Length: 92
Image (cartoon, rainbow, N blue to C red; front, top):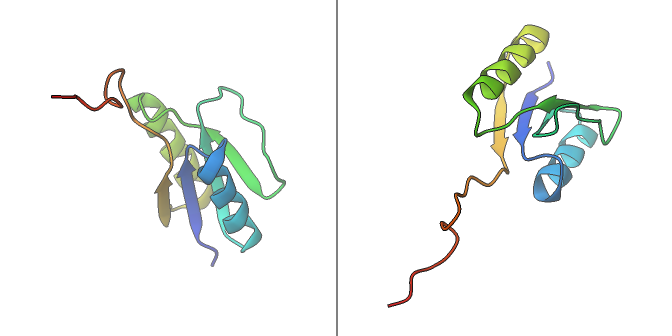
């Protein structure tokens, strides 16, 4: 039975590369993105709307995957969770 992977932040960067690599390696990949109507970067990757800052979005994405696949084996998070000001170091 194939492993089911959910990747957040999969629309670009490391998340997108990881999704592609795992899909090519035979995993069932769900690529989470904040786009309301996401498009699949590859035929064997299923895009899914997932905004990690919105609880309902998270619940909906998980429910959809569980209903289709019956499980999620792996969760990889590549989405940054920064608030304005968090990325600056204070100088003394």
